[in-house]
Length: 130
Image (tube, rainbow, N blue to C red):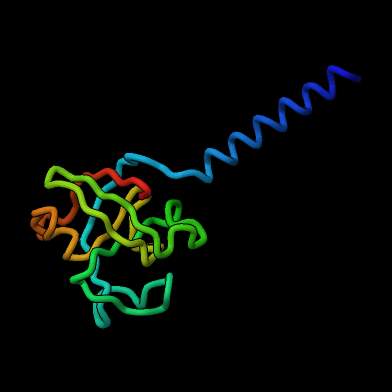
């Protein structure tokens, strides 16, 4: 009976550690970055986080559903790194069906500060929670 209790405690500790690590920040996740319009009249509707449209002059990001989660990153900042530099952008949307499995879609302002040409279409980046 004592060995069963030890196994249960050990198993419980492992589960706790997995949940604790999964809930923590993530760092340097490889992704593909594409351009997204966040203003009314551009692709998609209002941002899922707040139901509003936003200026493309702001540093904004829409994430694939697996990273967006059920809104866990809404309003939070992420750091995006590319060959052009580093920028922080606020998560405002889930790109749902419009994104690939490892894609973030950002505003023109993000592309501009990174010195990237939006006509490229997609660029490899990494992102991290702030």
